[in-house]
Amino acid sequence: ESAPPSSVAETGEEMTRVNVPGIPSAGMTPASPVIRRSSEPQLCPGNGTKPPSEPSNSVHPTPCHSYRQASPSPSLNSYSDLDSGHYCQLQPPIRGSRERVAPEPPTHLGGVKSYVERLKVEEGQHLTAGRAPENGPHEGDQGGGFILPVIEVTSSFNPTTFQSLLIPKDNKPLEMSILKKVKELLADVDAKTLARHVTKVDCLVARILGVTKEMQGLMGVRSGMELLTLPHGRQLRLDLLERFHTMSIMLAVDILGCTGSTEERAALLHKTIQLAAELRGTMGNMFSFAAVMSALDMAQISRLEQTWMTLRQRHTEGAILYEKKLKPFLKSLNEGKDSPPLSNTTFPHVLPLITLLECDTAPAEGPEPWESTEHGVEVVLAHLEAARTVAHHGGLYHTNAEVKLQGFQALPELLEVFSTEFQMRLLWGSQGAASSQALRYEKFDKVLTALSHKLEPAVRSSEL
Image (cartoon, rainbow, N blue to C red; front, side, top):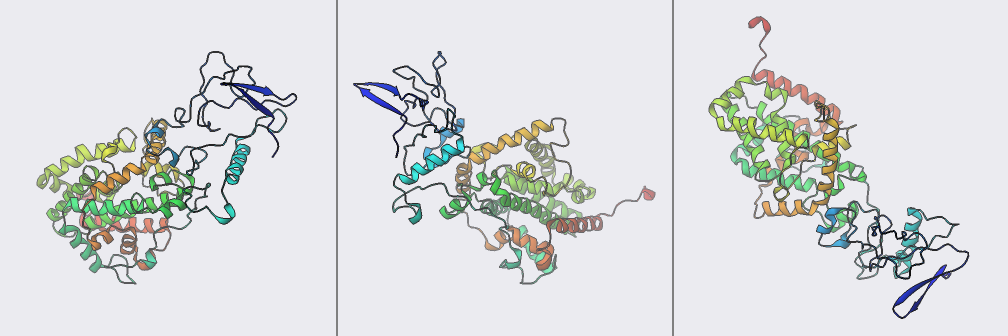
């Protein structure tokens, strides 16, 4: 290798820079024991000293802040392992070593190397410093170079190959025997137990729980909460949207399929409200809390005046809870004004965020919070800012979920009821579940309307 264009002569404890005539200076190396990244700000006292990128005749260069002090995010220092990387860093650190190689001095005339060029240089230096890429990482090497994450293009839900305990291989939409079994399973346990089963499945689908080291390598990140904020997390966002709407539709079918007395239907409505309250408070699961609330707020259910009137008479506390606490809380979540405490959250309220990121494909069920308020821009910015928190705290959501589900004995059949593939097969049948999402939702909206009008026919204007 050729000698560097500038040499450093050491005399005693002092360092003196000797510039080679005719070649521009490569700039001072920060005195910090950790070499600054090219993507980080360089903070130096503003006492008139020249920045390190310019030649300086000073014998003792002014030390700049180290990597830990000039973190790209204020919350980075809360990580116990700084070498694990951070989602807003432009270059992942090499986990096998704490040393960082300084970039080579510029080689073209008087110019400064671009960031991409410097990355190529650093990558080459890392590979020549003891790594053998053609043979894979050495034994005992904990890290390695950057591995390109896998971009998923197919959904994790495959209802056609789904092995069910409750549904035969070929089934029709809304088979009465299956609906009856589902109603019995949901009626036999209390709302808190239902909330635990829902949260267990939610956290597995969203990759908050059950993420192996191999999965982390394929995703390029440690948690699904970080993945859904990144460009290559699109399929996870689409899967979560599918799960959200399918869950809401199934709960609406459970209520509208109750063809008994108005009192029975009001009792079922009350239990659904209790489920929403448990998801919000006990489990800290904002995802399914919003899905349950979406079912209760559907036009086909909110129009059942007799049912809601009976709820207020027979289950007054449930009606007050829904109207005075749950609905205002969800509204504040959607508008980005409120959020549950992180210490109690297993699944944050990511629906507005993934709806924003997938606005071209997300099902339209009405105006979004940022479309129905004059402060729409502030709402959008609040949700985009919340994405940083969601991505950063994937480990905390994992810990909270493990604590809340500790010792939980799940019922396999009830877990299946809350799986998305089961719900798709139940609602659309073995053949219809494979059709396009837009077509499925459009058809089922008509089914829900027919069920609603069968329970409480619309009053004609001539009868008033």
